[in-house]
Length: 288
Image (cartoon, rainbow, N blue to C red; front, side, top):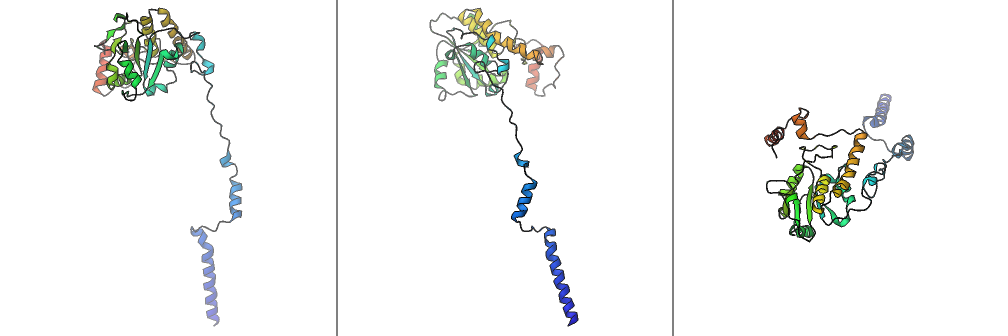
C-alpha cells in the first residue's frame, strides 16, 4: 500500500508539472485585463506619435506658380485682346508637370480665347463642341507634316474669327493624339516656318527647331492678329520662368539633335531600329 501511495503521488506530481509546462510549449495562457493594461502601458505613445504633414506651398491663383516664385509681374496687366481662339488639346501626362507652359499661356489670354481639353481620345459623341469647332471653315490645326501649309501663307481674309488647335505633349504623345483622333484631321493643317530657337531651355527638345506649346501659340497669334507685340508679351513669362530656374540650379537642356551632333549624348543608344533610325536622321540634318 505504501508503494502504491508513492506511485500515485509521483503520477500526480508529473501531471501537475505537465500542466505548468503547457504554456511554454506554445499554448496561449488566459488573457486577463491586468495583463492587457500592463501591455498597454508598456506601448503607450507608440501609435500616438505626432505626424507632421508636409504643408503644400501656397500657390498664386492667377499664374498657378508657388507664391514665392509668382510670375504675375511678367504677365500682361490685362488679358491680351485677340479675336483668334486657341483650343489646347493636352495629353494627361502634361497636366502633372511642374514646369508646364500652358497655365502661363492661359493667364495671358481671356478665358474664352484659351480653352484646354485634357485627354487622349476625343470622339464626336463625347466632345460635340470640339467636333463643331473642327468642322468650322476657319478652324486650323497646328501640326507639322508633308500635308501642312505654312501659317504665314494661309488666307486670313475671312471676317469671322479663326480657331487654332494645338496639341500639348511630347512629340510621340502629340503624334498619337493627332493620328488616332479623326476629328483632328478635319481642320486645315498648318505649320510654322520660323528660325526661332526655343527659349524653353529647361526642357529637352528633339531638335533645335522644336518649340514649346506656349511659343507655338505666341507665334501663331502674332501672325493671326498681325501684331508682334503679342508674341513678346506671351514669351515674357516663359523667359522669366527659365531665368529663375537657371538661377536656382537648373541646367540648360540642349536639344537631342545638338547633343548627338556634338558627341554629348550620354544615354544608351536605343535598341529599337525605328528609334535608332530617327536619331541617325537627326545627326544628318534630315527633317523628321
